[in-house]
Image (cartoon, rainbow, N blue to C red):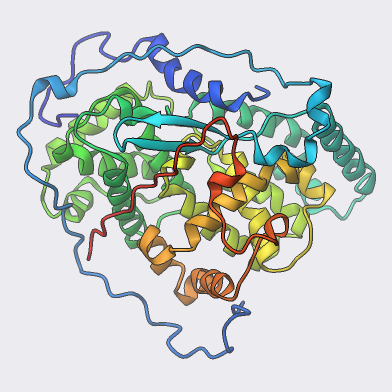
Amino acid sequence: MDAVEELPGEGCGPSASEKRQPCASVSEYLNIITDWQSPSLDGSDAGADQHVARPDKLINIDLPDYEENPADLRVHPVSFVTPDNQADLSDYEDEDYDDQGYTTAHSGRDNTTGGVTMIMAPPKLTKKGIAEIEAARELVETKYQGDVKNEEFVDIGMVAEYGEEIFAYMKEMEMELLPNPHYMDIQNDIQWSMRSVLIDWVVQVHLRFQLLPETLFLAVNYIDRFLSVKVVSMTKLQLVGATALLLAAKYEEINCPSVQEMVYMVDGGYAQEDVLKAERFMLTMLGFALGWPGPMSFMRRISKADDYDSEIRTVAKYFLEVTLMDERFVASPPSYTAAGAQCLARLMLKRGDWTPEHVHYSGYTYTQLKPLIATILDCCRTGRKHHQAIYDKYSTRVFKRASIFVEGQIMGGFKLPFLHNVPYYSTRDLFDEAHPAPLVMAAPIHLLG
C-alpha cells in the first residue's frame, strides 16, 4: 500500500468475488458447519510492580531500504473454490472419533519460507461429535431450567433469551471475515517473519495506549485481511499495522488514539496525511466490513462454565494473544482459539476436564481441541523468543504474571494428558500423515532488541 497514492476513482474497491476469496480459501480447509498469585511462585510480591523497561517512543521498524515500484501495489486475484460447508456425517469416521484430533488438520505449501505452514482449523464433526454437542446442550438446559438466580436472565440488558441466535450469527461472521491463510503467496517483498515483527510492535503500541483486548485482536484481523487482497512493500508494512490499530480503536474504544499520537509512535516515519490516506484506502479494501466478532466474546461465553474464574481467564487470555504471533493461527476461527485457550488454561491450572457445559458454551468437543492446544503449548515452550512483547506484558502483576506461571509449568514437566507418554513432541505428530513435510515456523526478529 502506498500512502501517498491518491485513492482510485469510483468503483475502486475489491470486487465481490475478491472479497469472497479469503473466506473461500479458509472454508476449503475448515470444512465447517456454516489478587491471584501464580502457583509456581513463592507468594512474594517482590518486584511485582517492576514493568519491563520500554522507551518513551516506539521506534520505527528497521527494515532494509526498498525502492518502490507501482507494480508492488497491485491486487492479485486468486481463484478459490468454495466448498460444500456441510458436516461430514459418514459413519466410518465415528470409529476413529477419539483419535480424530490427530488426523484432521491440513497443511499448505508456503512458497515464501519454502516449508509448510500448518493451518489450525477445527476438525470435521462426525455423528458422534454432533451427538456429544447435542447431549451437552440438553444437559445445560435441564440444569438451568427455572434457575431465577441466573444473573443473565435477571439483567434484561444481557438479552439472554437471544444468546443462542446471537452467537450463531457471530459464528457466521467469524468465517466471512477471516483472512486468506496463504496470503504470503501473493506478497513479493514480505514474509511471515516480518509479520511477526509487525504484530510484536502492534502489541507494544496497544499496551502503551492501554486499549481493550478486543482492539488488539480486531487490529490483527484487519492487518491479515488487508494483506490477503493487497500486495505491500516492506517500507509500508508498519503503516499497515498503525492504520489497522487506529481503525480498530475507533471501532472498539470510547477514547481512541489520535492520528498525531499514532504518527509519534512510528517515530515520524509517516506523516499524518499518509495515515489518513492509508485509513481511507484500508477501509475500501476491507469493504467497510469492520465487525469481525473476535475471540473475547466467545471466551466470555465459555467462562460461564467456569463461573467466570479469574485465574483460568487470565491464563487463557495469555494463550489467546500467543496465537496472534504465529502464522498457523491466521485462519483459525476466533471461537475455536478461544475454546482451545480456555481448555489449555484449565489443564495447566489442574481445574478438571472439558465438561459438557464447556462443550455447550464453546460448541467444540475435547477431541476437536486436541491439535489446537498442543500447538499453543508448543508456541509457549520458547515464549521469550516466540512472543517477547506478549511474554513481557503478561509477566507483570497487572496481568497476574501469567506468562511466568506458564513458563514455570512447562519447565516443571507439564504434559498434555493425551500425550503423557511422549517426552517431547512436535505438533507435526498430531496431523495427517498425508502431509509429511517438516514443520517450519518463522522466528520473530525482536523490534526493541
